[in-house]
Image 1 (tube, rainbow, N blue to C red):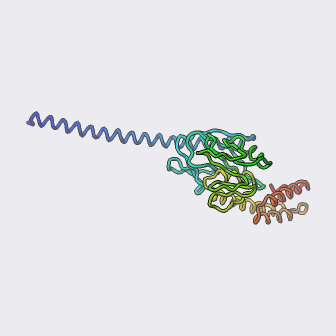
Image 2: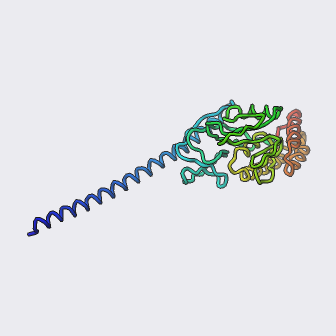
Image 3: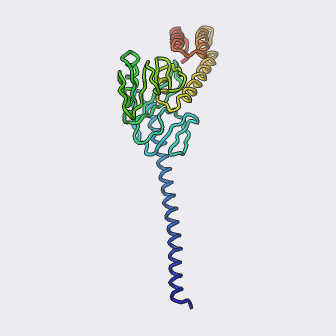
Length: 280
């Protein structure tokens, strides 16, 4: 028969083993529960983001909406995806944002045209104003103010830089600062990138990966132009000639200037005035 001392030792060993098993189970349960809650939060971010973007793009008015990002969220250009706390999710939405985003942010949707519609994209910025455009008063500046009025962006005619804010300079070259003209945008240490509409400018200005965003936009521009050229063959008829439009679109493939865009718009209007189907 075991001695009393041996029984006490056995009881203690049993308690320690049982405690260790319970502790391991509790830790595993806590970790699993935390993982499930985090995944639930990620899925809620994705769902809320999709709903917000769909509502913005469906609205006939220029508007914004707010969205809370309880976990750090990064928007990748290539591959086109969202990274939420290092977990990637694919998205079909073209999203322009600094990275990463955390807590409350403001969303606005812009149609990208050059001159025909290419796509729509969404700009997402932190709610607290962190962006300042330094620009002299001009017609172009007024266009920027009107387009960006609903976003947390401020304008200054003269720069008095504050720590923690990002400054963009119109027609002014500043060391280690982003600057732009009415046709190009320059990032520090990079060659100027051309842009062909105000919306195109915004897609580059607020992108964390501007070169990648530019590549995607230009690719869509080329594809849409080639698609319209193919469409001309279907529209051509004895009463409607599309030779001028074909010339303008072919030229546009190599030169996306605003002048060429205006020429395409004019050619499209002329076709409609002749009771011919418009190309776009």
